[in-house]
Image 1 (cartoon, rainbow, N blue to C red):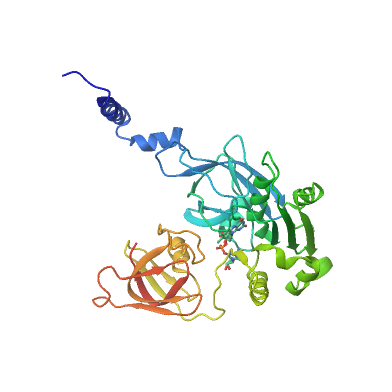
Image 2: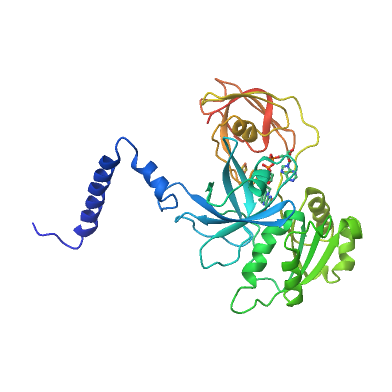
Length: 369
Ligand SMILES: Cc1cc2nc3c(=O)[nH]c(=O)nc-3n(C[C@H](O)[C@H](O)[C@H](O)COP(=O)(O)OP(=O)(O)OC[C@H]3O[C@@H](n4cnc5c(N)ncnc54)[C@H](O)[C@@H]3O)c2cc1C
Ligand code: FES
């Protein structure tokens, strides 16, 4: 029988499989993927990873990490975030960081991290991460993105490291061949001038006429009261508003804008949780690990602290990327105190789906992972 054009893909698949078997045999007793991981860790078709190619200090306690992503990286929309999995003292921990890069010829991406006191991952990334180090990454995600088409007038309110998704937006907007027709006011709040990440770059945007920059420093101007916005931004009511910063500022802004019937999109770095929490308990994972956890530690954090590999996403209760079955026991929702109870035999073998990033143990409980 003669072969046809339709047979070509089948033949090339067969050839690939034969070559793969040959290569497998050549590296036995090792696994071929393990060998490729050493020489070509960013190849397509494997777990998505990134190589740190630069760690650039921004302020005394923040740094930008430039990362070469694996071939399967599918890009992002400015304002979105990246989940990174980092080994800190032998434990793989996942955290979320906004993407801060503009277009780059080398295809690299970047995140900018502020080290918080006692912060495991932020402290590691700012002070200990090294060029050449591989980290795990996930595809970009998030809803904190500008609408298309762009609004005529935009208000951006940022505080501290809350500037990160916004610098990503600005870098991408102002690297376009034709500057966008948009009137932007950026109110940027920091404790001190020295601690302001991207301060000089933002000033340069202001001087180039890309935006009106209102800099606020707590030590110089006092804490920003959102009622001051009406003076700082006279045409406030005409501007579509985006804000990213600490919970106190975002809560006040949401109340302020809601009272005026104005739209506001926010990005929170931490979930809104109750001040008061209850008793914790022993969390048992079906994979065998057990950890005693207090009533305020999310099950996701508790599991990761003893090396349980758990799915996760935003870590603030938004994306549902961390849902796992509660097979037995009780957990408490840290946002509203609601208790979920699973009783073996009553709730079925699959248990009850819970978000592990915003639920903590409320007594002994078992999670299937
Ligand atoms: C969508 C999204 C985008 C984010 N983007 C950025 C970013 O661009 N740059 C950046 O630096 N961070 C960003 N974060 C925050 C980041 O994901 C981590 O929460 C932060 O780095 C702390 O992690 P850690 O492991 O250092 O602290 P942990 O070891 O988890 O916590 C240490 C202590 O600090 C407290 N804590 C945890 N997070 C914060 C926080 N954000 N502020 C103050 N106290 C905290 C904890 O309650 C605990 O007491 C983002 C978070 C989200 C959800
Ligand atoms: S990780 Fe996003 S909801 Fe839990």
